[in-house]
Amino acid sequence: PTPIRILIDQHCSDLTGQVEHDRLMDTGQSVEVAQLSGFLSSQRSQIEKMLGIAEERAKESMGSLVETSCKAMLKRQGSELKRLIRLQEVNPNIKEEEIDRLREWIQASYDHILESRLKLDAVRLVITS
Image (cartoon, rainbow, N blue to C red; front, side, top):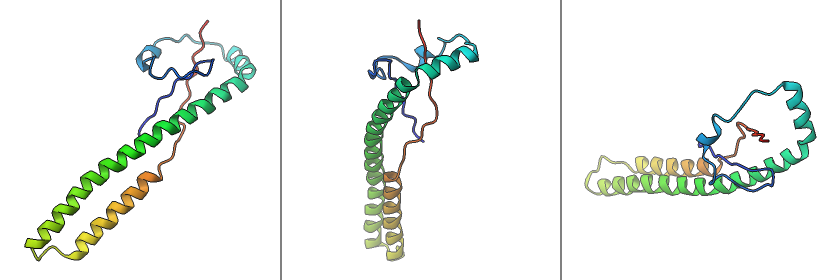
């Protein structure tokens, strides 16, 4: 799993690149549950809108992550496949089945990377006054 961090403000602006994760770590004070529950209820539609925008941004980030991962895997395993094919030319002990298995493994790896899906693990709501 590769975490994707998205930070959206109340105006639905993406602040991901402007606010570091560490700056948000020690900002909180405890809030009474009843008070928080009322606030969340009143802001539900805005929060859902913000989550939707964050999800779209995460999908964009995920697309580049998937592309980068596919390229890295193909580069690494493609060079291994080429090495094995060259080795087969001088070493008859390298069987065609081994090369075919590596090709199948490369294709399966590529397919698995393409099947990557987003999974929301956490939402952090920062309320400032």
